[in-house]
Image 1 (cartoon, one colour):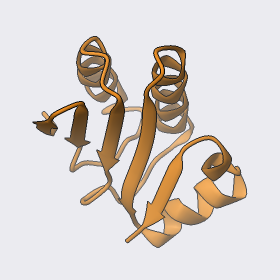
Image 2 (cartoon, one colour):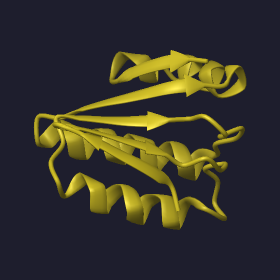
Image 3 (tube, rainbow, N blue to C red):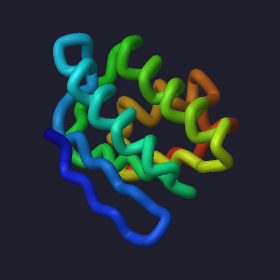
Length: 101
C-alpha cells in the first residue's frame, strides 16, 4: 500500500515501490479510489520508485486524464534521473508537472 497524505484539496500518494506490471494493479486501484475524492491537485511522490514500465506510464497518463476531466492537476515530484529522462523524452512535462529529485 502506498503512503497517502491529504491536505485541503491536495492528495499526495507515495507508492514507494517500482510501478511495473507486477505491481501496477494495486497502484491503479488505490489511485482510482483517491481520485473519487475529486482533488484539485494530485501529487505522486516518486521517492523509492526506481523503475516504471509502459504499464506504469499508462496508469500515470490515465490519472492525468481523469484529473483533467474534473478540473484537477497532476504533479509528480522527486523523480529519479532515469525516470525523469523517460518522462522528458516522452514530453510528459507538457501535460503535467514533473520535478526531478
